[in-house]
Structure formats: C-alpha cells, structure tokens
Image (cartoon, rainbow, N blue to C red; front, side, top):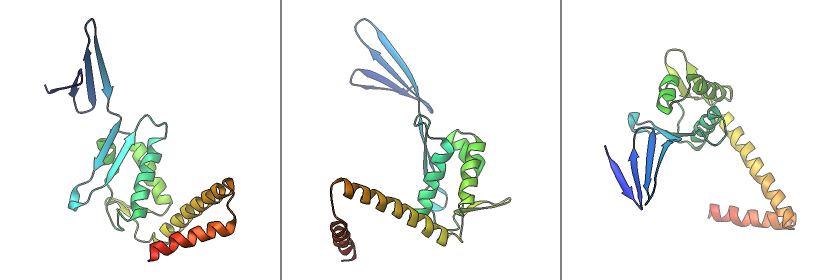
Length: 174
C-alpha cells in the first residue's frame, strides 16, 4: 500500500477513492472521499480528447458531455471526420450510464455537429461548417448583448462602445 504523508495528514490513493487520515493527540479522523472528477483522454492516432465529469455541480452529466464535445468541435480541437469514442467505451471510462452518453451524442447529432453511422461509430460531421458558423454567431451575439448591458450600467454612450470596439478590433488586425 502506498501512503503519503503531508502536513499532518496521511493519504492513500486508490483508483476511485482518496483516504485521508489525520492523527491528533487524542483522536484519529479517517475520511474516505470518492473522486468526483474523472477525465477521459483519447490517445488513438496521437490525438487527445479531454472530457471531465463532475457529479457535484448539479448540472446533468449529459449536458456536461454535450457542452465539452461541442466546444471541442467549435474550437477545431476535434476536426471534421474525427471518430468519437464509442458510447459504451466512453460510458465505461467515465463510469456513467450508457443512456447518459447516448443522450449527449443524440443531442449533438440533432444540432448537426456529429453524425452516427450504424456499425461504424459517431463522427464529427463533415457538413457542419454552416451550423458551426451559426452557433458561433449566436454565441457572439450573446456576448455583445452582455457588453451592451454592462456599458449601459457604467454609463457609456454607444459611440464610446464603438470606439472601444474599433480600438480592440484594430489591435487584432495589426
């Protein structure tokens, strides 16, 4: 058994638990904590896909998966044609239900970001350029709305916001 001592605590790590033992003069406290953050790394073909699931945030797990995969597709980290992990393998790796994984994949397919091929797997859709542009455009609209609200809250005039925008837009193009 591997134990680690650090600042009065003794730790023991297992696959899915961490044990903390604190020894004081008159008592011993033992904690057993389940690891709540699991990360899936795909290492096939030299690629890497990172997914993490938290069971304590209150956000449904299928939404966490959907959003992380969606963000990786939109950022280009998952290129078109990329094979996603199988529903069963991903569920097994993350220790979640197959139904949860399937729901995340189904919602991504409804958005046009992935395509399922019977017997082959789920791929990043090759015909999703327009849908990716649409999603990014909506995200940009939401951020601009937040900027408008914030600028009104601090009393900026529309011309001042446009000046700021032009200033920063010019820096990016320089």
